[in-house]
Every structure is written in C-alpha cells, then in structure tokens.
Length: 175
Image (cartoon, rainbow, N blue to C red):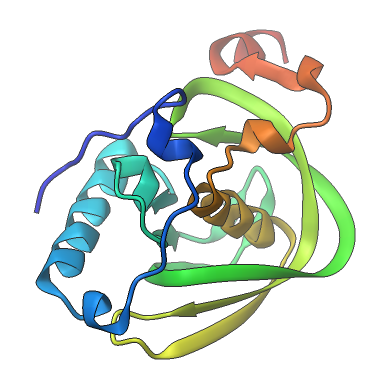
C-alpha cells in the first residue's frame, strides 16, 4: 500500500474517458493493489472520494467514504468506504441545487456548481456483482463529482457562472 500522487488539472489523463474494467481485471491483484493505494491516498489527502484517473489510472474505478453527521451541507448519512467499479449514474429528477465544490486535482479552488439532486447509480463491486443506489441531495452531488472524473470532466466544466470560482483562502477571508 502506498500514497500515490494526485495529478492536477492540466494533466491529460484527467480529460480522458476512462475505460471499463473486465471481470477478470476486477478480481486481479493489480486492481486490488490500486484500491489499497487509493484508500491510503484518500486518507492522506483527507478527501471523501477519489477516482482512479486522479492517480493517473484511466479506468472506471472510484472510492467514496462519508463519515456522516452534521456538515455544512446539512445532515449526511454515513457511507462506509465503498469501491465503485464501472459506475454510471442517471438523473431521476432534473431539479438542481448548488454547492461549493472543491477537488483534490484542482487544489486551492472552490466553485459553485448546480447539479441534479436525485440520481440512480449502477456499479459493480470487485467481485463483479452489480449494485445500484438511489441518492438524493448532497450525496447525489458527491457521486456525480467523482464519477465525472471517469468521463474526463472536472467540476469546473459544470460551472455556469465563473464569477463563483474562488481560491479557498480568499473565500474564507471574505465570506
């Protein structure tokens, strides 16, 4: 297990559509090692989610862990560390809400992004078993943010008002 370097905006891997993993790959030692490295990396960088392209692996794999409880976004249910292989989401209701998003691959910046607040995700676990979840509110935002990395998108691409892009330090100072 190792902490990997998170690549930053400008690196070409972040703009590629990641490829799906085969069932054989899901069960491989290489993918399991990558997941272990991603867990260490997520912990070291203190994030809630990490997509494989952020550690320069262009495959459809992400991990998310949410402690739960009261946050600046309201109450969030806890989500234990979960691996999402070959995930996709579909919008169930196009109604949107906005949140200030940041990204480990775009350090120091925050931007206001409006996203649909009701989605269904479909994914596989590392044994290849299919799963699906329906998510509402800010949880839906978290998953869309992470899964966008698998399609070569950053939260900046979802912003509609670039005057709502700030350095975190300045946002904290003047808000």
